[in-house]
Image (cartoon, rainbow, N blue to C red):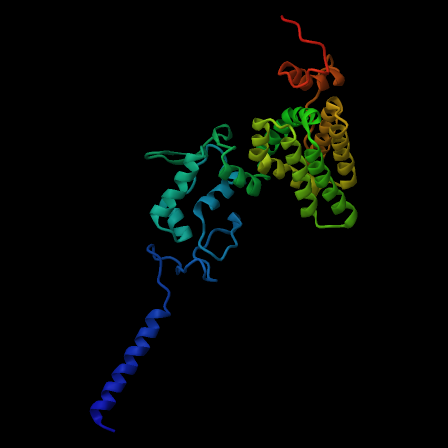
Length: 321
């Protein structure tokens, strides 16, 4: 073989080996940390702490990671979150990406940035809990947060009996069918030994159908907005319930009261459902004062309905006081 040809072939072989070596060597992060890969890679891009509960093999969503840590109360109100540079190193992300993630939580009222002092978690009262992204975080991560659980439960007590009473006066045949279908799904899960998730989904659909049955655009829309927060307590209470059959019977009483157009009974039955929820969550229903009779309390939302003209046939005209 010609000597010059041998030299050229040897050089070409060495060049090909070098190119393959470069292509198969993963680049390091700008901070000199762990190798970075794209989202489709099976190798994690960052090494989020084990306490964050991140087991994803894709690139970490820093906003999601922060939301989980905050909603799980690992960064309680008043505390500082890690510095931008620390988050960049921890998650192998650029500073621009981390800054955008933090800003999304600032826009949601969860964080406040103060020049020279860092980024601090706001009091719970400032969080935009009806923001769709925030309600999503709440559904996924908030159950360990005791104040959120109590506040959601208290809110449900204050509005759901009222909504059920209104549904008992406004529900159409189609609405009643949707409520019954959801109830049947709950019953099938209990008696058929289905997965708990099936019971949860049917339970959430049951409450959603009652909101829709009011035919009040505000209540119906509020039902959609509150769906994640309602599902948070529904899933947790059902998972802790020792007697799903008891919960099922209480829901049936609500359905029957709405079907029979009995708003007083619908109100009382809904409180009975929420009492069970409170037991399963370890939360107590608000105590009644000695001067307050249960029947009188049951009439309060109905009186409001009458004042707004929703129940003209159930009471005498209001005085003109």
